[in-house]
Image (cartoon, rainbow over all chains, first blue to last red; front, side, top):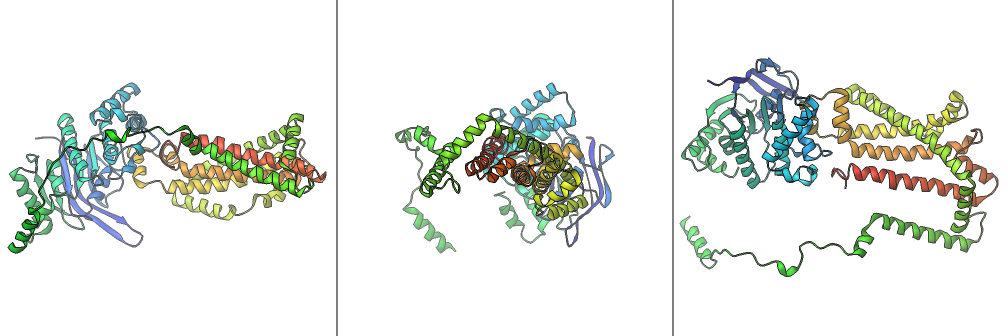
Length: 263
Length: 296
């Protein structure tokens, strides 16, 4: 039995807009084990991004606890590196290399020569060695996302938190990035928590999928998809239908399978 | 349903699928061609700016020659002659150096204060509100209107000048910096906080560079306000300061009805303005916001 890394128990999350107090998730329980590719899947507005932010330490639950390695999460910290959907997460005033080394310098987790070596190694791993000294505005969306992933992984966080990281990419690039993430995981076996609203992406990326109900997000199911890695596997269609049923009810499971293909 | 399908297949029958090799693109020559020398010269910003200056000078010279009254409007050549004469005699250089020294002190103090104010302002909601209220109050207040008060508080001399310069720099820079800080994308803020940055390190490593286009704009406005205020203040009481600045140089010449010297003083003010804008600020821009792709 693998080791429990992150434990979320009975977490209710609320945030304020200028006019409303919104309950994003209600009494959510789950636990992420070491080397899981843990996907949180749900319809838009079900509070999955909010849940990820809470794990990141950017907001405190009004009820329940979030523990990482037994320690309660209170503030953002470099043990939980986030990769966001937006490209703005890279610092435009730093080159690719400077962006990647920045968290290591700030946290002083590694001595400088080691940090430099790690940054170069991880840049090579995501295939950007040629672009090492280029500023982010000269990169394509997919390349920016690779830099963001490289930056997060170079620090070797306990868990990598990814908030729909491929949602802003075109379909071809997204497909390539999904494969790249999986092959990186194959090499390094990091723990990643991944938020998406695409059923297809969830099945491909995830080893476990937590399905949330529509707003406010409550746990609907936790599924094991470690064995499904290709769209053309027979299990893929069945799993896709099953998740669709969980999310939208019995009615139109057939339409759901079709809908998940272009994602 | 089946009828429609048959119709579609009938329509497709005349349009077979095909695959071809892409046509050879060698015939259009080099895909990338270096620009010719003339093209490069004309698109150079400095060349364009110089051309504009030459045209303006020509208009000036022609008008002054036509007017033929050097008391009202001296020619460009006469102005340049006076300018050159005063530079060689050292008067103009002394005056300019005096002014620039005062300006440098006031500008630097204004920037430091603006930095401190905005750092505290972004730390909390109430701080932001305090600074925006202060800025709204004092930014429209002309610095020169504070000069009488400054004279009472600090007496005649450099401290009063520095006080009014700080006033004109501080609010313009604070306002722009605060606007810049507030428009830093949330994702960028979060990625800073994610690695555990807080307080002054967060401001210095994330907010200031991220808001730099806006801060630089504030610094430009602040510099122009400060320079303007200084020259105006020297015109009012330049008499009293021992060496006197560029404003005093202009004032003196006006008393002597020496219009060419007035023009040469104004020319100096303009030249310094151009120099700071197109050399110093241009160089900062090229090394920062342009390089980072934050401003075109």
